[in-house]
Image 1 (spheres, helix red, strand yellow):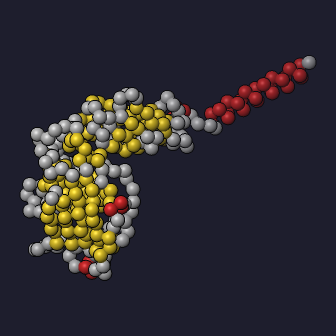
Image 2 (cartoon, helix red, strand yellow):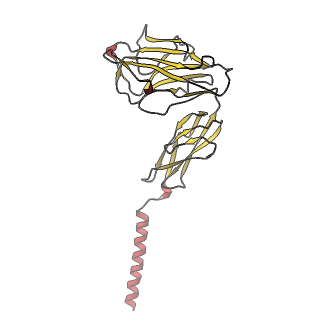
Image 3 (tube, helix red, strand yellow):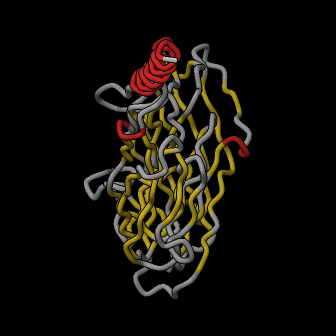
Length: 276
C-alpha cells in the first residue's frame, strides 16, 4: 500500500513537471506579439488613396486584419491596406490588427482635406501612369508625374499628347513659375546642357510634349522613376462638382536604335480629376 502511494505520487509529479516544461518551452507567447503600422499619419485630399503596411514581430504568424474606426463614414479600406479617403473632410483612423493576437493592434491617423482640384491616382501596375506630385501641387495647381513601373526597355526619349476636356475650368500650365516650357524633365532622361531636347505646345487644350535624351547612343533604362512632369491650373471661380476628362491620345518611345515605338494609350493610365 505504501509503495503504491509513492508510485502514484511520482507519476503525478512527473506529469505536472512535464506539463510545465512544455508550457514554458513550446508554442507562441501572445504577450510577445507586437504590431506597427506605416505610415502612422497621412494627409490626403478627398477621394485620394494611401497604401498602409503593417509589420508584426514576436510570432511566425505575420498576418493582419485591416479595419476602419469610422466604419460607415471613414472611406474604404482593402485587406491589402489600400485606403481611399471619403468625400467628406475630417480626421479618420486606419487600424491594423494582428492575426496571431487580436488584442494587439496599431492605428494610423488620416487627415482628409477639401481641395478645389482633387486627383485620384490610378492603381499601381507595370505600365506608364500619371500620378499626383503632392509636394508641388496646391488646391488650384495640379502637378502630374509621368512614372514607370517594371519597364526594362532602353529609350532615348519620348513624345506624348494629353488632352483635357474643359479649357474654361482647367488649363495647362508651367509646373514651376520659373519654367520656360509647359513640360518638365523628370529623373530618368539626361537632356544635357545648352539647347536641350525639351518642348511642349498647347492647341485646343491638347498638350503635346517631347523629351529627348542627349544622343541616341546614350539611351537609358526605363526603370522605376519620373519621366516627365506636367501641370494644370484651375479657374478659382469654376463651378463645383465637376469631373474633368483627361486622356492620353498619343505616346511614343524612341529606342536606343532611333526607332520610334508607339505605346497604346490603354497602357498609359490617368487618374480622375474632380473640381469640388
